[in-house]
Image (spheres, rainbow, N blue to C red):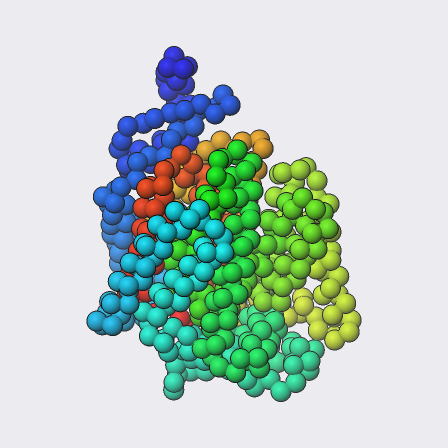
Length: 491
């Protein structure tokens, strides 16, 4: 083994997470052999190294912010938010109440994580803890700031939310059928989305009658559905890799996905949270062992996503590529897409609503001067960078490194699920290239990307012990708490 390792090292062919992370985290470099392929063990993770990485990342972002500001003020006019790369952010004063709530949230999160590990990370308990922490960290903003303002807007503020369009709907069927006629005159959020966005808030308001209750319902639905789907696919991935205690480790990774800053911040305040399980489910349900469940489940998720966002065109790209990569067939994904498209055709015939016309209206609203690379090249380039960096910030620097580690590891033939992350990243890059999300704000608008990153994180954490997993999870959750304490992210 040592001789073969020396040969590989001389040729520079050792593979895996160690090569990358050891540059940041110097340590003993241990290697093991898995089916003839050298795979590096996960480097030791300590609080000192986590804080060092976080500090370097924060300093880099501050320097980048100042550089972008200087370019905007002295070189060329660009579309630049004040707190670049965060598109929407308003600082808040960390009062004693907010600091106390933040401290309680972190303490409860630490204890709950330890308790879940002892009990085997049962998925029901994981989801309940994840939901409780989402609600708790949002309470740092206060009750109104957490649950009322994001849905109904601030008192006396500009009426631009889905809620303001929803309460003005008198006939839901007429609104749907004639949506393209009124779309351009809707508020800022609704006019660039399909009719399902407004109608979802409409039905929730009819059912619950209170903005705070709507916010809590969205959070509960999104966290529950996302947790269930993420857990199912991660357990399947771990079983493919012949990992012991797959259920427990799958629950641990699912909880980690619910502790992400983006997931902690947005589910209580944004309809985009409901797009997450729909978009992710459309892709991953294709691997279900029962063809009927795979096709119908994927088609239902795809249709639900298409009711809420035009970014749903992102999903078929992943579905086709993912299925082909795993099976060299496209039968399931084609069938699922055809069912979803047929549903829209049937709706169009019966109601006269044209989905493509609505999409064209939204596209012209988002980019009135045409392809932005040609009409406003510098803003196009800087917002593309902003799109990527904001997603990375709300993912956390530690997980960004682990993501790269997971993507660098060799893909086992029996485990093609990790390729889902690569496919999703390429599809998202293509989406950004088209000029979509012209003002960025992608941590919210592209909230659906985060579950797609988890298979690579599972691979990146391969070999990590319970202490290291807890440290990663608590560092990510600690960033979520600090970000909630720093300011508000809603408009």
